Length: 351
Ligand code: RAM
Image 1 (tube, helix red, strand yellow):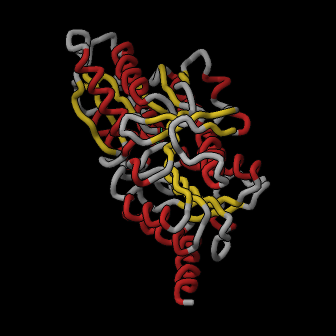
Image 2: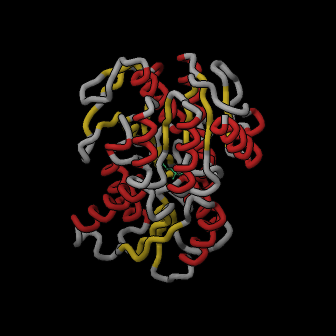
Image 3: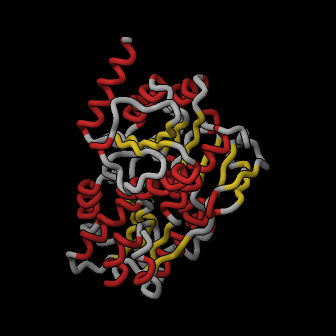
């Protein structure tokens, strides 16, 4: 009784704070809608746990998750902490365990800190996958990865080099210090620089700053970066950061350029103006869509999450589970997509 009252209070609180949304299967509602949340989830619900509430990229990923779960006939809910921290995600996970949800798909704010909570969830019979930003292999059954992280890191450095014609310092505007996905991509950026010291001699990495996937903080960090006369290009491996940095540069006459990972609908003005000549991403809703099918394949026993497992993922066709570099298993969505002045007019309507 105590537990259910606690659940009721914590869910109601989340609803008041605008952090929770739920949708039944087959719903047409596209955006997470705080007012639609019931007092508690039913035990057939797959819950998507985002990095934080203000992240519009995460909301787009959830749209795809909701679409696949709707095709399957499973209820979904959206949970997002008010800030991108592990502590806040742990609070959510604990509540979801109490509520006995069926599955959790989480974009992690920390690779290792969620382990005790997610292990507790798996021990309680809840299926757990990470997507977009991984938890360690012991904290999940599968990770859903966007694209090859080495390609993402090396491509961003090569693009920065091309944009500056090989002359001028690089800055990175990233998310939080603990973000698994951004840290992995940045490690591959550094490897690319180290692998070709002669080529990159005049394009050194000058600094890395943290916008915390917070639009206002990312703008403030950009404003301080552009004060540095040695910086010629800013790499933003974050959709929130690229959008914020583009907004700042669009309103200055600085000779500083941008590249990074961003949603074409948001960054189209920066590509069109030439401030951001090339940006990259994957199909944002498809990564959520794939996660819904993977979670369901685990849930219905079709796969266990082992290497070589094959499952059907709706319009994405058959997907195969492979091993990742940490010895866990993952499913990769596909190739990195590029957005530039040639394709942005059609891409910006996609997502
Ligand atoms: C941000 C998030 C997310 C990342 C995208 C590209 O919004 O940090 O994890 O994958 O950008």
